[in-house]
Image (cartoon, rainbow, N blue to C red):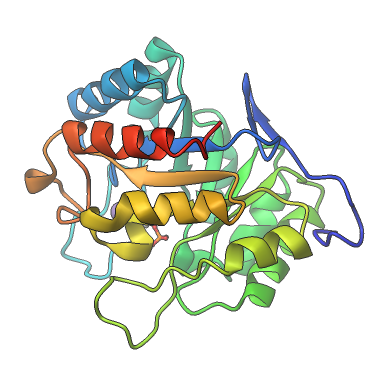
Length: 263
Ligand code: PEP
Ligand code: MN
């Protein structure tokens, strides 16, 4: 069902006035984690002023260490909704438990399935049973074919609003956190009709190369880019090293806009 052979026309995921996959690339930005109402509100205000329409923020955080911040859970979803309603933003947040999928639909506009859960088949089935856009991340060591099969789990249960996102894969290269597989973009666009995005933050883990990587993604045909932004990255409760502060985000976004690839 997700194959281009089955459907020639691009799937367009609409979030109010935002159409993803319809030809105009989208910039999705926001903190790694929802940490507090004030933190999310600060980010939202800056994003809104920058012309951003879709905000991300993790409430359920799949952390490598059990001793690291695990996210605010449902309270985090509540904060996202309250702030997004105030600023007129659309929201994306990760859900890790199939039992939370329906509940999440009340609070957020897009349910993210993270890299670590790309092949959590019960979660994929639960995501397929709701009528809410899903942002499906490529697994840490997943092939393109496995990503497409994971998407098939969702679409085959009737939820056709699925977006794919390349977020870097594990290789021997240590210069970046993961290796951004830019070739996945044109391959996914060719093989599938679903929107394809690129998460430049988690793929590179390096603030200094976000703009060129975002431009490469867009030049390769990506329907959008995702980036992490935090009011004060140094004290962030997760991914402190890789989140942009507001002025860095403004420089990054200006750079991408100047390329003319975002229009
Ligand atoms: C995230 O986007 O918050 C995240 C945890 O990313 P990934 O699942 O790609 O590691
Ligand atoms: Mn993160």
